[in-house]
View (cartoon, rainbow, N blue to C red):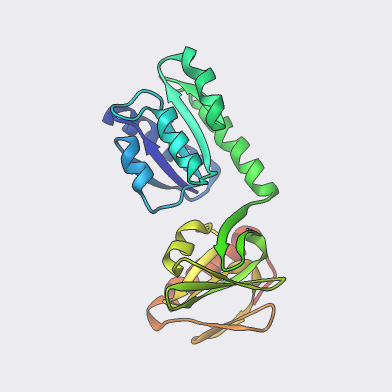
Length: 236
């Protein structure tokens, strides 16, 4: 789970981090946290996040103004507001806040918010991209593998292939780390759609192949092994 913490006070960034590490340990999931001390830095970031913890009161841009900018850029990630002022909760509705947590943060309410997000995400996760023909929505579970094509990326799905107008690194940042692996500078594969692999390439369940770089081989083997054990999949 890719998480951003946007808060101009270091104390609250550290406090939330401690709680998130406890959540990670309790739920046995991977968490990747990026920190922002102001809204403008978050808006300018090229990273994609699953959940943003947004402080309401910040210098320059407040949390709602920051969220409004994100929404105007078609950023539909989950935003959980945190504030010492409960009466500001209503203001966050206009930017489609997922939850509103009052400082000091209640651990049980924080954990429940993340549990609720995961339940929602498990139902289905979609990614939105631009192509030559317009904007498309792709179900993440339908992605078999991604292939670099100069400055663009070809996303191979169970239905067809789409050429996306961003590079493969940007695609990698938007995909779930627990479900996908960058096995080569030109390839990202979905663990779920792997049929078999050897030391040089991976065969997907549509019988197409992706290459494994020598430098990525050991890390890929470990990551795929962990995925198989986690989901108890009967795969090669």
